[in-house]
Length: 197
Image (tube, rainbow, N blue to C red):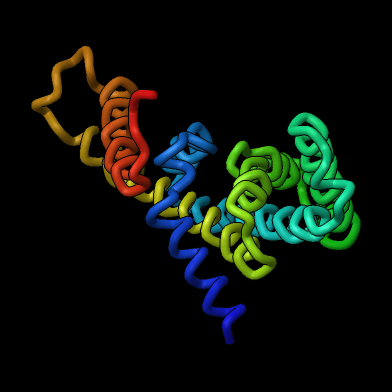
């Protein structure tokens, strides 16, 4: 029961307090791109959550070994990247051989796997000294946080496109970037982080 509560608490923390997309910009370009295609939120979020959870689990198990924890940052980054690439290759091969998945779908899978959000989750789990259940919750929360960010960006983008009071020079991408910046400032306030070092 404690494992389930730890998983849920960490997932909620990752979604609302430590929203890695809005508070630190991880995966922001994909969130903006996906927000223009609301039908792809769910599929892309499942992919991001899946990769985050699988890499979190494998990397959490690796962190338990004494040899791995002694590696420098660059060594850990290489190992995490290798694990992420191996997980992508295995899943892509399974999908291609068993389910005859199209190359376009595999391309989307690759974009989800190589998203900076997915790559950052094992580092965050290690620095926060998350338990096994916490690492799973963090992976699930990263995917839900991505959906939340993309949904907020999509709603804001639709409102900005219909607003006739925005000057012509700021319509489109400039207005969207200002909106995303304001969203990011709001979520940075939740994290209690300072803007200036």
